Amino acid sequence: MSKLIDGVLVSQQIKETIRSEVSGLINKGIRPCLATILVGDNQASVTYVKNKQTAANNVGILTRDFKLPETIKQDELLSTINELNKDENVHGILVQLPLPHHIETSITNMVNYEKDVDGLTSYNLGFLFEGTPKLIPCTPLGILELLDFYNIDVKGMDVAIINRSNLVGKPLGILLMYRDATVTFFHSKSKNLEDKLRNFDCIITAVGNRQKFTLTSKMIKEGAVIFDVGISRTNGKIQGDVDFRSVSEKASYITPVPGGVGPMTVTMLLKNTVLAASLKNKIRNN
Ligand code: GUN
Image 1 (cartoon, protein in one colour):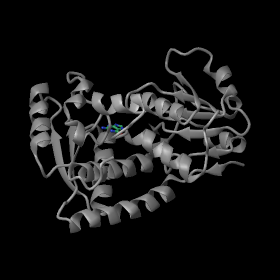
Image 2 (cartoon, helix red, strand yellow):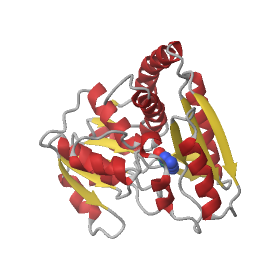
Image 3 (cartoon, rainbow, N blue to C red):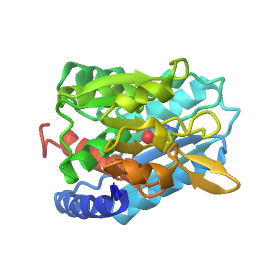
Image 4 (tube, protein in one colour):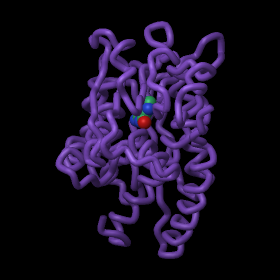
């Protein structure tokens, strides 16, 4: 049987540290503040944003909530972002993805890089690429924290990442490469995934569509480390990309869904907001 990677437990511990950092900042007259922007009313996004705000408030971070209509024009969204960029009391800005089709996802690049708590701007991705990351995207950062907590050293490991987004796959691959893993990216056009995955020591899957892809025990190597970033809803039930029952018999470590990577993503957003507030006020310099 594999060992469970418990994202709820690790999150709770990290949130304790964040809570005391927030108190420290408040004592210095700085109240960390996160602004969230949600365009439209995609139910999953509404829930995610609500969870992020509640988690922020629970550690003492203020939140500002911007809910904009689905039909908003790109330049109207841009003016909201620009106002928040200028607002000295706002330390972090999150534009929830996905955005409606008429708005370019690259609008996230208009967030001031110092407030880019999603780590999605060219500036932050550029520093990550170059090897001196500043604000790191939350899901990859959460996975690094889980690896550290469970003392999983990826040095020399063959790691498969099934995702190639700017939010997850690409930054995660670079970060793991800097930890001396050998990283391979898989995506919707990759061939013979089922056969190839069996060669990997660690598989990180973030597909989010169980009809398209489900990781089963016959696709993995005995003792592989499995991170499940996928979220699918079937008849109201939340599931990951992994057939947990069979895969947990064969893996050495595995994250559950829910309760694995998801809570860590939220916690890393809080961590980044506190980091952004600390850097801005020269409490920290990296
Ligand atoms: N949509 C799903 N995950 C995320 C995330 O981490 N950040 C943003 N901005 N949107 C998301």
